[in-house]
Length: 163
Image (tube, rainbow, N blue to C red; front, side, top):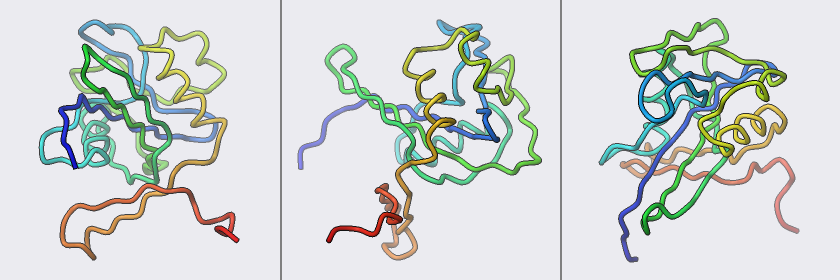
């Protein structure tokens, strides 16, 4: 196998009914724009764990990864750039609390999505699809069996498999 440097970002998609947890950026080039709780993966960190870390840092919420909802890939100055959005379950009673990176963190109904100024069209589409589609790649954690971080994201087995 050949390794390559990669720009790797993640997001947490937390749904409640027909709403998604969104954050409004406080600083930088996306200041004032809306998106999912997101960030970069640190060296030695699984992307799914980075998504949970970012959710905690930006919204003070804990969660559990249910699966992969969306993947965006592109080239950024000739370097592969991947962005993985994980479907995350959080306590229904938990109230998001923004940190110093975001000015707001709240559940926004899908009907309000079109009136927001989004970080990107791709992030808007990820949030929209999370509300309108109940399917995601399931996550199976094999770490306990393997003795090291090892997670499989695959289609749910509900359809019965191959014949």
